[in-house]
Each structure stands twice: as C-alpha cells, then as structure tokens.
Image: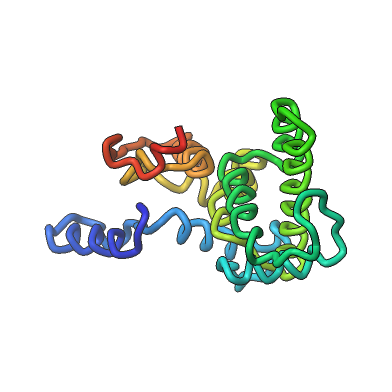
Length: 212
C-alpha cells in the first residue's frame, strides 16, 4: 500500500477479526518493502546494511556539489542551481520510475527534439542525471525511487539469487493499484510470478492521471 498508517490498520483489523495467522502477514508500503530488501541483500547493491535514503534536500545538495566540475549547455554554472535543479531532478526521478536508463532517455529524447536548444536541454538533463547517480553511489545512499526500482530490476535479472523473498509469498494484495508506477508494477509482477494477485483500485482516484 502507499502509507504506513494503512498498512498498520490492515494488520490491526485482521487481528481484531480473529483471522488466523494475521500477525504473520507482511503489510507495508512499496518503499518499506524495498528498504528491507536492500538491507537484506545490501552486498549485491554496493551499499551498507544500514543504507540511508536521500531526501530531497540531500539530493539537491549532493547533486549541486557534483556539478561543480560539469560543463552544462543550458544551465550555466553562474546560475543558482537551487533555482533550476529541483525540476531537473524531478525529471530524472520520473525517468527512473519508468525503469528507463539515462542513455535510453537521452537517445529517445534527442530523436524527438525539435531544435538545438531542446537537444541541449536533454543533454543537460542526462549530465545532471549521471552526476546525481554518481553522487548517490559515492555517498552510499539510495533515493526513494531506488527502493522500488532496484529490487524490481534485481529480481527480474537474477531471480534465483533473491528467491527467498521473490518466491516467498502465496498471495499478494495491492491497494491503490491505479497509482502504481512502472517500477511498482514491475516489482508486483515479479513478486506474483508464483503467487496469486489481488488488487484494489479506482481509476477515478488516480493521482497520476495527468501524466497520461
């Protein structure tokens, strides 16, 4: 589900209803699941077992420092990065949610660019993305998108290595299904490859409907 409160209420209601084994049910957010996953298999992701998650301020600070020696085309070094960097990072995170690599993003963007200015902007976004990912890796941190995207891709690539968790469920219930990102959908698909899937959703309540 999408909130810790909802997860706690789910388990509480099952326990109060006298459902057998209710206390053994894992209930939580996609991000909580991902954090547990990364901490269990930390050695495969190049992070510490107590890996930290970078919030927006940390993301901005790390990236701004990493850009000190990066030559950009549209975003001049003399500009205050805190005025333009957040929208660019939002784009970078959106691309990660779609499980699209930086190289693929750049290639597809350049293919539809209408002029030199737009092409330069796309190249800058890719440069920022690389600087951001490098800064995160150097700090040994992940962001909130990584918490879902990295487990999803890891299980898809090397399922046997993560079978204890990937194949550890008989039934999976996903709430607010209409709001799942591509990374969340991929993770759900991987976790239900050998399990039954139940979903609850309402397209009229979709918080991302404006994305198309």
